[in-house]
Length: 385
Image 1: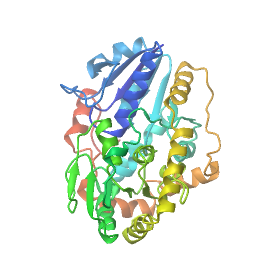
Image 2: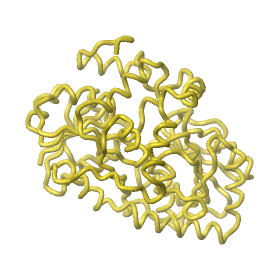
Image 3: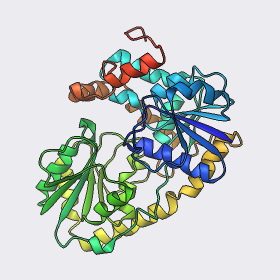
Image 4: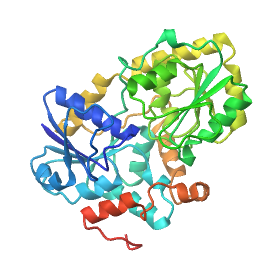
């Protein structure tokens, strides 16, 4: 089977890492994989890549010979839907990207991806709920985790209270609240693990690390805090669990599909630094901390094996599987749909969120990145989208 993955760009991000992981692992199973970047390829990819990398100028030719053509974000979906020659065309949905847009017409353009005639694969049940709002049943394949890398490095355990705050330097990741919570809880030291600008208030900022380096950071901290407003199906909490680091996180969509309060993590309300600080303080209870670490290990062991995920993806892309959005272990299909409805980009809570994002929303059509996509594919620019 030849699989062509279409990505917006090859850059350091969790979503691109997941795509690369699937391409690499399918390649090892004997399938030919190509990753096509809509923007120019970097001189050095940020991840280990065993699949072939190709530029946007090769997309039409590669699509013609593909058994499976996979879009991995809304811009890739716009490109893939124009390629009508592939045998099977898929949409790998990793988040509800309209939540990142500032203008209503941008939100409509991004949401339109869910109406395209592409077979949807969602990484979480709440995203399957989003697709169901658009009349589609999705394959649901949760992300895996490389436990040969993300594991406990006991020799790195700190002797003092060091709290790690994880998150990209964008407003909805709420890194500032995480740092505030760590300070309120009396942490001796606060580290920030991020992509982009160093946040204010951290004693040390770590960025650009490979997977082994990230795993060693988790093992070097007494707790990890991640207070995002929403996530597709977040990896950092599972990575921290695999490394034996207790987790404090929010009740965000995606997160609560495997983070269970009191079992493998402490789950707090959105945008509540005081609640997060109280949760961090509770980790001083050695019995509670030990129970959460053991629950985290069990969660990773039972739910994050890559082999099962890759076999599911292989069956899906080959056309031998049926849509698989079964009941989520932690909530029902109805609850998934309710989460999806609450995150609808045109809802009042969303409008309030957009106001708080201001100029930081990354997917504004005026950005250089989006202008480059539209030049490559000769797509119109303007409110008419």
